[in-house]
Image (cartoon, rainbow, N blue to C red):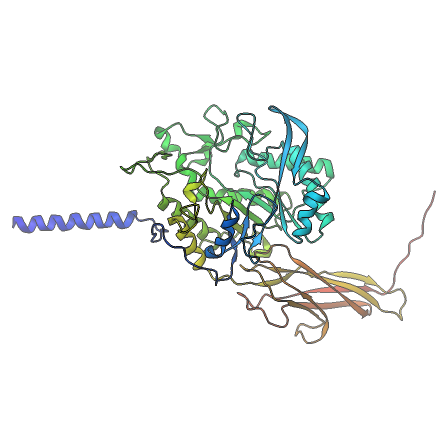
Length: 533
């Protein structure tokens, strides 16, 4: 009897332990392995949804293994080792002039706005998307800053000048705003101040083809509103708006409580705060007439370091609960963010999302970084500078991109509604029809695409057509197509447009390639008398 009871107790105990183990396994976790030989995803089309920051030329050769479709190297010259089918997004660097810690009324641009400087880089990268600045909000604590460090009014001025220079040199170029360190109340105040300065100086909202952001959950001030050397306080903003750093484990109850303006160490990989920052910037964009623009996360990952002692304890940062930012923890964060942006948890919102991309909130994301020995090395995708083995995080990155099959998807938007007139009853009118063609799929279209205009909804009576040589993905940089429609008499004339009318592109959706518009022709032109004084 005793033996049976003992066995029964043991079985119950084992059942309880097994239940605890099952419950404590993270729902979104995946089986992860240690450093290994990298997979080769080069036969898979590169996905524009995912990218990696790279710091050395050799790293460009590894991008196909990762399945990435774009990269940023924090400069304006592409790395020769990177394949041509992976998009290079150049970044122009800015700096406000200073005398010690006193901001002066001027700025520098790298490369400079000269023919031999930025002009030559534009000529070598026609049609590129240019990011103007890098963390201009990152203020110094010691009189200097490794980032661009501009007062809001100065960033507005510098951005405007660079934007105009690029557009004058290359009308096909796209220009994007700089990514701020993160999105917090203080950073949103910085954007408000930039927007106000731009509007006051130039009489309009900021002109941008895309918006970028960095996404890190990091404290800005201590409990006394003094800047801390993490995110620090956005230049020119109120320290009282800063997200506060907890003072130790005894304040762990404040973790996950963003309403108290607190970011714990443990919140650095908080997926709810990750989503909140995205929604905050998209909401800001909508209120400033920028909803119909792509949003690119050009830098994010885990920046807090990790190095274990032999006993398993952390040599670097532990969170308020005594947990390390281990490779497993970083890998799970990568999975959760990939899944949120472009997986089962896809971030879409018809109120604030990007209409041309099925109302996704984010069009592209970029992991920091492929390899570094400095800040952010816990997120390295490769284990050594030789890049021969992926880390656990790198393997997780490859698993995420490998399970998504990139496909293009064409969609026409903004078919023009045109008004015209006939001077005399016996004459006819000619008008210009136009439409914007987007590729909101996950990969570049490299073959020529035919865009055809029709007079009927059965798409049999052709007005004319045009050919687009290629089109980047992720709903970036639409191509505008224009044709002439002549011999129109008075009245309303409807027309239809089909993208890929030859059906040569295999798309993720084949039923969204048609849109329509109309032309109104008045029977005569009315001339009003001129009144002079």
